[in-house]
Length: 162
Image: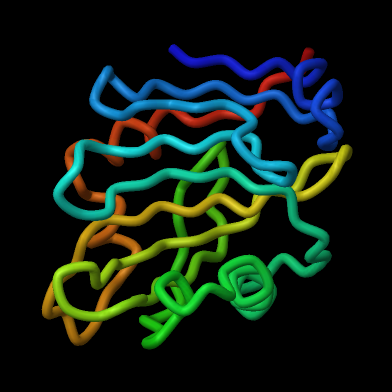
């Protein structure tokens, strides 16, 4: 299990939100790699495979709010949404949450993404999952999070106090 205590988040200038997850040793986890990021977990080379948790100022809780948070966070052309998938839900951190799927980039680096928001008294998290999707014309959250390296993260991710 990987644990990020709320006190560590606060020490890095982020809202004091603690989290825990099990990457089952398939992802390389780096806590606090960026000023607004709690953690990034990435897979082996050869294509995109990511799990990221970001601080967001988005106040909404529906799929439109998730899209706004994604569009604000991912402005680099290779990461920005090019095709939105259907709105859906994702069971994460003990609740069914509105989620959006989208594709970014082209060719070999085309990536399928699934994003959702996790609200906490201390702030809101933008949680994103990504896996390679070369040649895809559509995407869904179910497709993205069913990747064998991401599914354990989805099942185990939780917000912890302290």
